[in-house]
Figure (tube, rainbow, N blue to C red):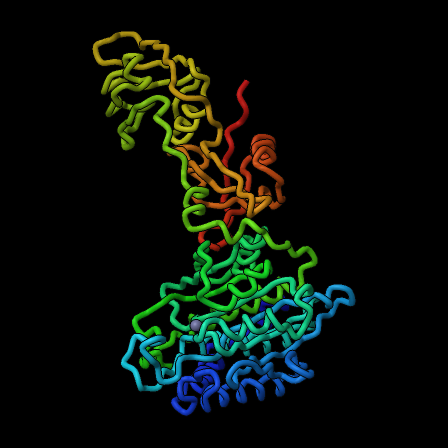
Length: 483
Ligand SMILES: [Zn+2]
């Protein structure tokens, strides 16, 4: 509750106000070491002082100077847990941009102020608002947070590289890093999340914080040296990065404040705050996954790849608007069990495996769950007596019609890899790619544990699933066990 209230203190209006200052022509594109860049640093210094944060830079001040007059701006919020506060979460954005633009850093035209409203006044504003929201909480999180505004990012991640090489707090105490770069141009309520593979369970953590928002999360496994999170991941510190996507004004003079999507920036910043506070506050924060940086979008595609669809067990279609009794067959698929058993179009299927057919959904799930050999009763035009036919169904019985795969990077969850059409899983609305997080509101440990729960809990069973970073619940009607 407190978290939601504090998140609500982050508003589109306040974010846009910070962006309007930082992306004003008077800051001349905030190039590191220039008059405009240093003026932007002063603005941030004042913001941190006003909020009563401690200096996190050199000599207990807010600046860390390096290079040709460059300055990281660093503010420290002490954690509330006597033990855990020694650990530090770095929450950051770069505040520099490319000044007037050159052939090396701009897509042109050159020689005009490049205001960098999206890149990265938007992220800088997001961090300022995240600080406010943290201060609006009843207590600071258990761990400490170092809020960092990096300089020199546009010159090759210089500020963050300098900091990890000359950290102002012991690098061994840095438990996690969160970075935002370009959160001002959200389209279609989507945000990209990078780094979710660098510690176990991060996809779930971010999705659970996202609960109740309209945001769709695009988890992207690509990790490149394209922003400051990279400097931390190369030091084996887990990191997340939020980003709302590239656009035609990227690294051009036209990346201006009025082109931002303030409502989207608000959604992104609220998510940023929620995740930052949660990471800093939860007692069990996972450690770095060395596999993370080696897992690529290709690895992701392989892991999330659905299984091939199964051939039908029976192979009939029927007139769904027919009044019955039973089902009037409209089509017999070639090479299926139905054809082998001699079922014909216009046969009326009265009973299946000893059960009179009343409900079409129930029939579908009975077919999927039936033993391989079943008896059916059909009425056929021209036959006086109903016929009994023995059918050898294809494939093996499946009770739920759902298959899943575990994910070593997200323990205690599974990815749905197959949903058989017409099965209880399909009727519940499950889709391939869904991730199952809880069964009947209980966590589970492994794929086998799921099977156990789904076959023993009373029906219907509530499943907590995540699809695109949105948590939902679906209700699974499980057919009773046979015999
Ligand atoms: Zn940037």
